[in-house]
Length: 213
Picture 1 (spheres, rainbow, N blue to C red):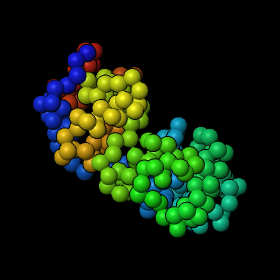
Picture 2: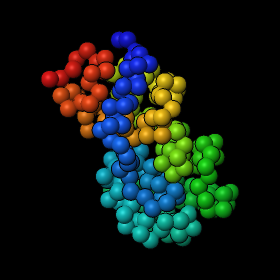
Picture 3: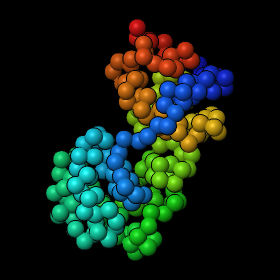
Picture 4: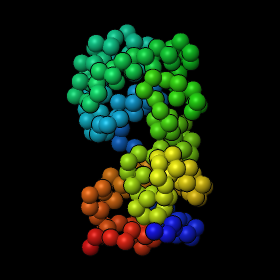
């Protein structure tokens, strides 16, 4: 399959922007710290499931110190409906301690620093940098990986390859929101099993050869 041309890429993003002028992530949070925790908890879990668990948790612990004061056992009880909750509870307490000890309780605005925190990888760091600090990062999840390859927007055999390609080809005026546009489009329209091509605002520029009616 041929990759989208520069003109097609601009039109592709322009259509997404027109459809969703102010895209928002679906994880609930109250500050950069709770965003970080929510993203760590969202691995192999739905945003809806994470929000259900973190609503009560963040109501009593929205800072690293408050979370540490709760303790791992209590955190585990709050998030037990989320997959891998035992490991995630350990990571939440450990990353909270590290934030207190190394960063004065603040979330660092730095990818390398974020990636040293327990449970935080490149994708999580990119989400936090984008949403909390307004960096033009693109966190490639399964939805974005699928869209990049299916449409011809940014093809690659690995998540990192797709991320690098997106950063290279995404026009500057679209970089801040690209992450959200693509995730939401993949979640609700360009779905894994059967994309809703009839509802797709970028259908005209998509190179997918098996479009649905």
